[in-house]
Length: 273
Image (cartoon, rainbow, N blue to C red; front, side, top):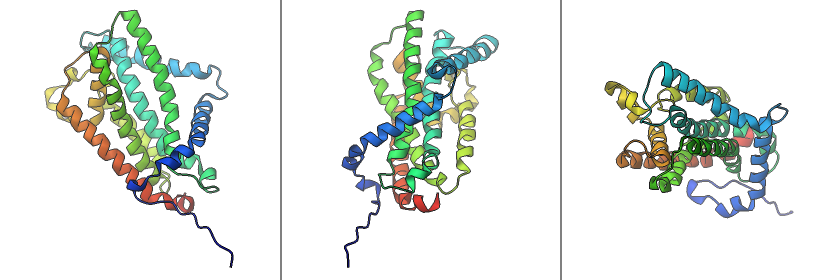
């Protein structure tokens, strides 16, 4: 009787094979580049859309919240203040939506060959990362135009960026695993993201929120991600380290929970998707 080789996915988040993930780095790069190119393929303006979108949002929010509603922006020019929030929220929302639908978007690949399934939601972050880098360059240009220089607090920026990425990736792992069975979720998540946007101080400052409603924002982890972005890049607002620490712990818990659920379910993906 010939020897049979049975390939089974490993289970349990503690047994993640980082060496194997590294060995598949070329596949991660290929999937990431494919997603980036697919976004702007056959468009007239191509990558210029990555600049047009944040600029349009900044102009619209500045007009509505800064000019018409007269909301404050902690002494910063409103376009610069808003772009900082748009940049952070855009990275989070795109990463979450792309990772949620990532398994469905790669059904043919998923059902034909073996590779670490974690690669798919990880590679799906590329589109949001590309948009974020372009927005960050635009943000630095605007800082130069307005004559705003970052202070020493900028050294904490990578920490806060990692915090937001952890929340998005953890939720992405969980939702992508659920979405493999319940495809409706790919329509639900963008809707929930839009609802979440309006209770997050992206286009306005937290100081404009009535006291009786602030507890809603305090419970929102993305509030402290965006507040941390503005504090580290623009030096505005006071940093609440306790709330930042709680947000960091929340990000770790979400990432670990999402990873655990993904690993638990990944053996079923090829059969149920």
